[in-house]
Image 1 (tube, helix red, strand yellow):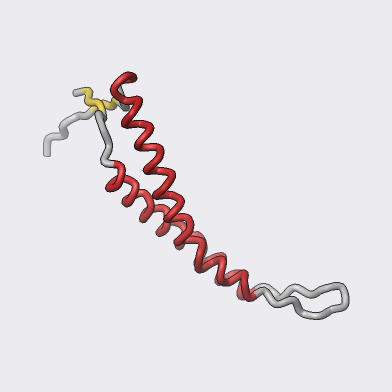
Image 2 (image 1 turned 180 degrees about the horizontal axis):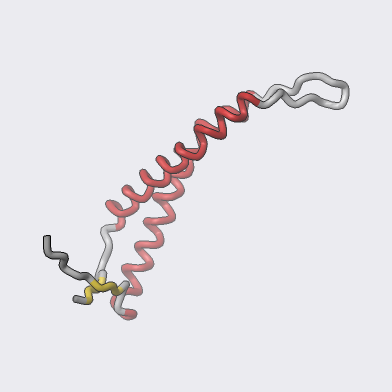
Length: 100
């Protein structure tokens, strides 16, 4: 059975996508932040330690920022899809019922 996606709910779909992006970002960022704690501190030319306090803040902000940007970009993309789908026919896929 072939079906076409006629229209997406932009808010609901973008919300789910944003949460997926934020969680995926956390899965990637947590190990990297732990690894960065094991690295020696960088030093300048005269051997003085360079503090990287703002580097840790970036790790904390990144999942939130990526989630927000994911929401905005997905919402825009879905809006465009909803505008062009009536003339192009939308995304088409085939479903098959599985007997249990």
